Length: 163
Ligand SMILES: [Zn+2]
Image 1 (cartoon, rainbow, N blue to C red):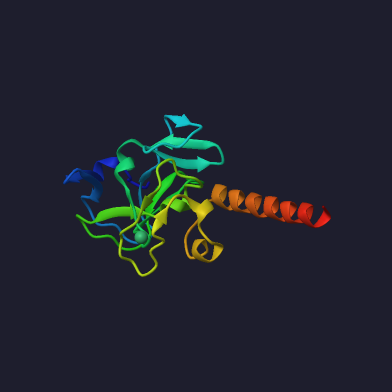
Image 2 (image 1 turned 30 degrees about the vertical axis):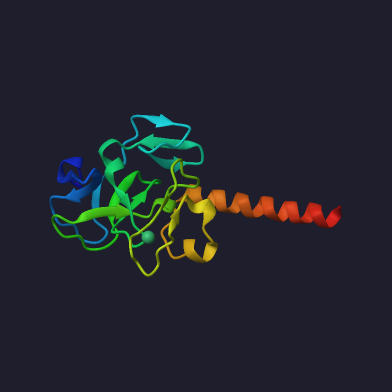
């Protein structure tokens, strides 16, 4: 049995900036906790993670997870689990790549993570080129949104040609 629980995670507040740190080490691939689904809404907000095309779940404590363009955790919405994307040390801040779950974010922001692969504007997968997205783990609903956008664009181009 996998022992995974939110008890291993702590919210740290520094200069009003919240972050989520782990009280124990994790090996790459290890499950850290489940994604809570007690409260699912149809619109995104600052406390939700998108888990399906029109489903956003209030993640409670996990809302303190910051974005990183070089993240150490992955939110897998098919299995509703959070797992380590790399080896993580005790006391390390946890972060994930927001566009891996978010198609269109409620509150976009500028990323200052300093990673060489920084996307700068974090607004959701919809606003990123395929060449950037393909370097990341993407959840199924994000792939579905991408296919829909592509199909709509092709349809639009065809209409323009036919006109
Ligand atoms: Zn960044």
